[in-house]
Length: 373
Image (cartoon, rainbow, N blue to C red; front, side):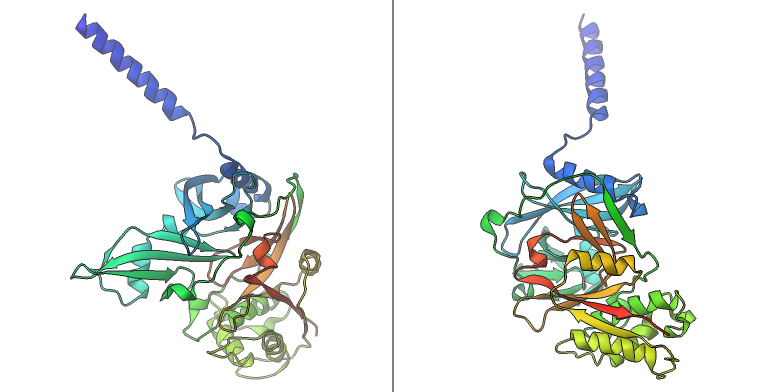
């Protein structure tokens, strides 16, 4: 009798295990929003085809309040991207996507040890992940020295360097930390200029080189589209020579970076002037718009022209970052596709999230480049 009962118990357990293994985790409003992004953007971003969500984690703001849920995006066994969803169960909006793994699914400790002067025998506490929209990630560690004393370490994930707590930008103070409700409809138009290079600031050691990197993305694109002498063929893989030349063309400063006028004038000078081994024989021009609209991005991309976008912290002359607009999506919501300067592939940014047009991180302006012979 005992033997029969034991057999029955084993069978029940096996059936239970089989049933549980065949049932997926229950969907949530957050995962549903992320899944919808995967579904509607996979035609534009081919890396999303056949992809699924993986290993979500809650990221906080710099003061420790839950800010977003970050999902890995997986194809097969490989993490191919990340999706960030606003932490509001009544209005979960996808704030951004990028074709790179999120920090919590990366070897954070190895990155820190490789990029800083911390010793290999450093003892780390459990990492805490911080998200600052748009695009910015930080990792907080408690580090223990040989005497057991604790030190707070903040690691700027994008630039792979240690920063102080005060260097981490604040996030806009919103009522209940909520984004405005957005109508969710299906379908939409899109366009991506996929041949825009994805150069990165880590390519060389020049200071504040995000402006020259964005400029090199633009020049590298036109080099492939009939403006051959903007870049050397042997430089196409990482753009190092082009970035270096543009750094001087833009008169980039190690203190305040690359102002918008320098960005535009530097590209025009590079394209139209013979200098530093470049045969500048073209007739490029440029203009800026300090109050751009989403429709402006649609128009430029529709004309086949990538352009520069300067984002910065309100009231700060030391925190700027240049990105390159390469496309748009207009449908259930509005997104711009960009190269972010950190090698994250195609990055999608939600245009309607308030920190794009509010305080303290916002789009300072669009800077257009017009080619011509």
